[in-house]
Length: 174
Image (cartoon, rainbow, N blue to C red; front, top):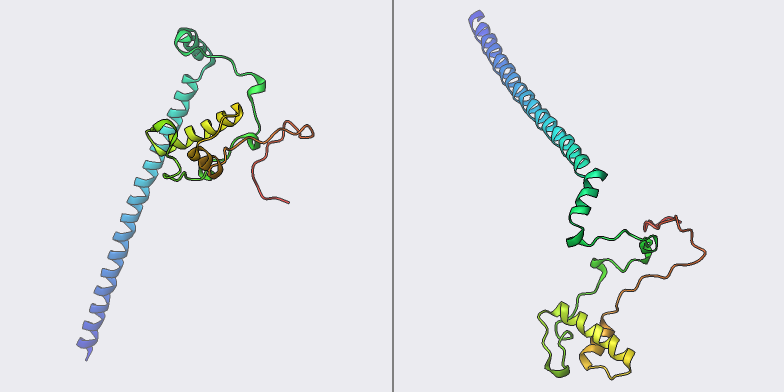
């Protein structure tokens, strides 16, 4: 009986040693993975620091001034006037909010004109409707349908009571 008990104990010890070794091996693999990920993170941080330094070098005012002088003939850059700045609510609607034009409405029937795409046809129809109505000329059917179906986004007028330094962020706070 003693021999059977010894064999059972030897089996339990072997199983325990196997489980311990397996757990140790998995832990070592996880430690190696953590070290690899830490090395990747350090590399990414170093890359970010390098790119920030490069950006600081590229955007130095002296360098930009030299480039403006060198390419002034080609670019014809002008300083931004303070009257050219607008508030966020004065901008037209977002691209995602613009309704999608209908292809059948985009056809221009006046003088057999053809337009390369439905988008440019819609814009051309809306513009022709605006120009025609401003001149007092009759509108085409396609221009009327497009102008009615596609409102042109207009910026909101500036109120005199508004604070010029305050910008709306679109949050829903009351």
